[in-house]
Length: 207
Image (cartoon, rainbow, N blue to C red; front, side):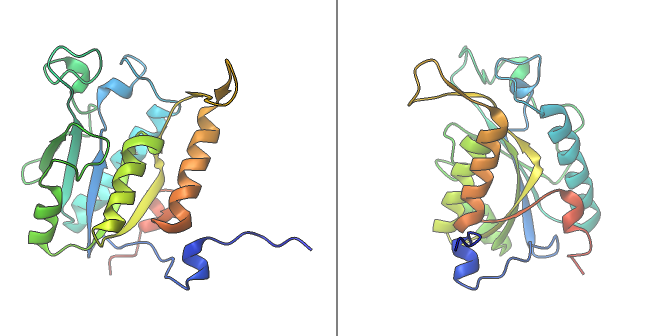
């Protein structure tokens, strides 16, 4: 008789309640124009995901939650994420406001080679709400590293997106973006984070 699979978090009896705006920091990862249809690395569903980030950002600002904007910068003149080019800029409407922190990274993991961990420690924040791009790459790398550093993370699924990937096991094969997205989020939900469907799922959690 088959049984529905359970995550490692469920089997361990861990809380599956999402983090609250009151106790968390909001980490937005690589919400940059490079991922738009006009950029060099367009993602599937990017427009809807960017709109969801906007809703998440508005909620965090209303609650006074610390916001960190993490952006990826390659070498000047690079084909993708040229820090001096227009597509490295944050998506219009999601730009930081005064008092919000911008951190530039050069590796997928937002903690690697940056002062993000130091800044969070100084604030005393041990819970994170994470959104951004791409789900299988920089979001996943950052959330996995956050566990190693002692953070409890909530990922907002609708505020993430990814792309089709070439298959390493099938010649000429493609793994569709929706499969990559589902697999990446399922892997994170297994052990590394509480995954919620959208920003509305966090409403009412701060009080």
